[in-house]
Amino acid sequence: MIAIGSSFADRSLPKAQWTHAAHFAACLWLLRCRPDVVAERDMPDMIRAYNVATGGVNSATAGYHETITQASIRAARAALRDAAPDTPLHYVHEALMTGACGHKDWLLAYWTSAALMSSAARIAWVEPDIAPLPY
Image 1 (cartoon, rainbow, N blue to C red):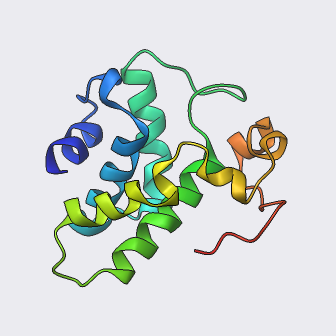
Image 2: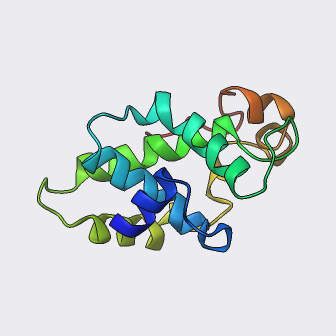
């Protein structure tokens, strides 16, 4: 967790390791271990910078996705809130990954694919169009 979070933050994490699970690992680490970071405010720019550093782009069709990021931060915050304060992060991460959030398409329970994958949702927060996000 520390290695993923810190190497994401300093943009040295190899792109091949920036997986769905790594997104949640980095987020959990930032939430618990980096009190100087406000995830909802700072993680978007961190992801954009990481994308560029690893050869990616951030556009209306690729790269950073605001709605997915903010929904994932909410889910990670809820997981930390629901766990005992001394629960090791890898246990919190494991619980997330073995639950609904562990599936790449977990957000399709709340958004239609068209809404979630739209340029509007990539650029700015778009409210769920199927069911309210429970976090």
